[in-house]
Amino acid sequence: MVKILLACSSGMSTSLLVQKMEAEAKERGLDAEIWAVAQDKAPEDMKKADVLLIGPQMRFMKKKFSVTADEVGIPLDVIDPVSYGRVDGKAVLDKALELIEANKN
Amino acid sequence: MDKFMEMLENVLMPIAEKLNNNRYLTALRNGFMVALPMIIFGSIFVVIANLPFLDRLIGDDAFAAYQNALGPASAATLSIMGLFVIIGIGYKMVEGRGGEAIYGGVVAIASFLIMTPQIVEGTPNVIPTNSLGAQGMFLGIFTAFVSAELYHLFVRKNLTIKMPEGVPSAVARSFSALIPVTLTLTLFLVIRIIFSFTPFETVQNFIYTLVQQPLTALGSGLPATLVAVLLIQVFWFFGLHGQIIVNSVFDPIWYSLNNDNLAAFEAGEELPHIVTKQFIDTFIVGIGGSGMTLAVIFVIFAVTKSRQLRELGKLGGPSGIFNVNEPLIFGMPIIMNPLVMIPWLLAPVVVAAVTYFAMSTGFAPRPAGIIVPWTTPALLSGYLATGNNIMGAVMQLINMVIVFVIWFPFIKLLDKQYYGEEMRIAEAKA
Image (cartoon, rainbow over all chains, first blue to last red; front, side, top):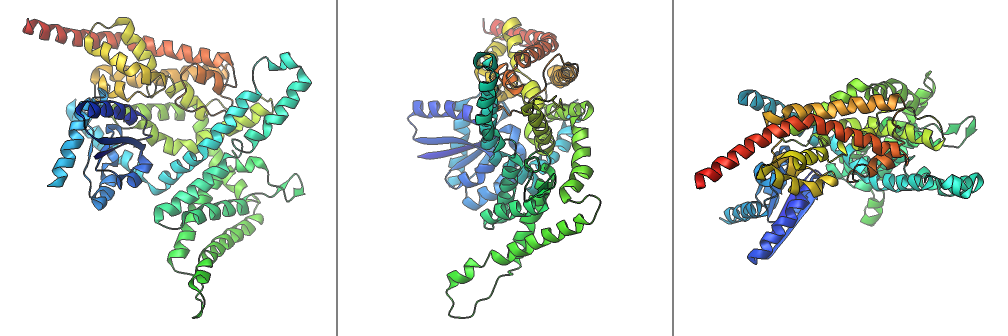
């Protein structure tokens, strides 16, 4: 089971992406929990996640979030703007799995 | 061009980071978020209390009784929103510092009430509700910041009562909040007493006259509004969430103005302000999201031939109705795209100016102080925000036309470029 957390200003536009990612995970038969939150809730939810992905419009939060991410030992990154614009569930899911995999080593 | 863009981004990123992550602005943003359900609840009942044609349907007396019955809903929430904002700020401030957050909330409320006039037209032991809404907004925010910080400082200094041995530790703990709270509130009481000897008489009056009034006067004017609107667009152009950055500074001003209008609306008086929270949220942003991109989606469906843009329209359309437009902003892309920079920056500024003049001449109604959730679709939001006035929706429609016209040539240009590329790729394949 992989747990993927997405964060943006209010968790609105990232939730759009969550739907696409869930559909993609289902297609692959991947057991995944994917959810989106507003920025202020992200540090709390990071404890329950394997990876944090930040909406590009909130990329200035990366530095602040990485403090908590280091504490709980999860990787994080900013979602590529092009994939974000296309609401490309496949690309972002790949990115998330890649980050989780790299974090294992 | 690239060099210049890079340079600008390097300037904007740290600003965005600082404004968004500042301890006080974070607490302020959260404070308003805590208050939001209360604000929306009150707004719903202002809308219901002012349903159109109802007075003619049931008669003036019955209508007055109906409004009286519903009045407490907004009076207890929307009109005194400052109270909830203050609890939220105090709570989040202390929570952010890692202390017992609920005391941050109550100490902020108590400090604020100590600083508030407790007399109305000579009648003592009465707190004017206006002090808990528009008029006390800035005082409340300052007080919440200071009281929460002081409370936490006193807690950290370990100013607690030492109990002799043999006293259960739970007893000692029950006193743990006592000294920090007492010290904080005493300080505010002293401040209040000092101010009672000045011509301002109350701290609220002092803050209102010296800080809030000048700031809201500035913020309600067209120049500052245009700057705010333009800033939102500039931040977004670099792919940074402009709204959240600019709002964290402007919200106290926009909400105070909002409540002034609400009070006037409920009293049946002329609305004093044009620019309020809802002026921005409904007439500028709330037409598809920042940059009013719903009209841009219409342009896309009306004129484009390129597959890329039509797909984008389909992808961005449904969420655009509810004012979520990240797919469009990142997908077109609008960010860092010199081709659409002019309409992106220009359209909202023009719309803001036009709306302002339409409202100042009385052509369009002013926002009535009702807070409409930002995901409410355009036209409906304009109708609701102006107190069930169809002209509010008409104003939004006019704004959409303006955006449509400004964007039209640029989307055509973009389409020509994309279509040409698509054709070349198709030819290369064939």
